[in-house]
Length: 374
Image (cartoon, rainbow, N blue to C red; front, top):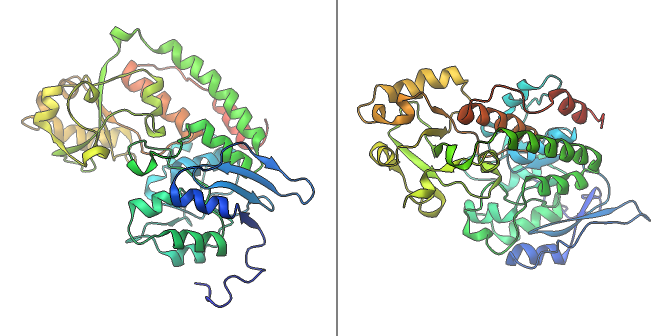
């Protein structure tokens, strides 16, 4: 950790500067963050990008090292062709195996660090010494104890600015007073921070084509299956954390595919609302056509069938579920996804719920954009 006597040396942070008082006020109150557009100062080559809740962040030059809150932002970085973040919240939840589906795209996370290590150490931020922290500071202060506004200000001033938004879920009460971004709004912000908007624009065009392909395979409303999404981390699950499909980015593939949310049609509350669980008896009352279980993304489809699905098929209650009997229990996708992983996961989801076999996006085009051939 830097010595307190010299940590604010004028040479310490010559690479990036934050938006000063405006950014501090925005974080402290979660309201009033500037999002009025991005500005470039040509006289000294600095440029400013706005991101709620931190407001304006001024970059003296393009960041070279960074820390990402989670796999959503890390995947955006991969799409932009920048070096991987030095750390993410949990490396185990940044599922780089999705890139295996695209020749020419890969990310090595062997040296990546977990930010969450029995809490989140402020000293770790000093050790990482990143040029920018793509993290919603409110996530640090509200989800895990120990972080206060003064700690945020200290890391911002002595190491590097915060520049992030908790886009993956809209279930947090502390996020009600400042705006969310959808996946591509957030992606554009990060592209501006890294000065790689050409790649963002190319991905945005590809995404529009992809959305058109997806819309063509979605059945009429009355023909769509009812799906239930839940977290079941164990290989032999007995209880589940229910997820109601919301506007967060972690549900983007299911919204785009227009599935019926079986849980939303009941009085079961979303896990984020009451931290509650459901059991097999509750699932049997709902009896969804398709059961999508999160928490197993490190497994292949075959490994998932041989463990979780096999256990449920032999279970006294679970074996009566229509989804179990019909072979419609699948991995439910991760909490975090960015522009590349969303393409892979949406295509996989279309295979799961609609039986689609065709490729829905141009893999070579993805690899070309990542390489800078836009």
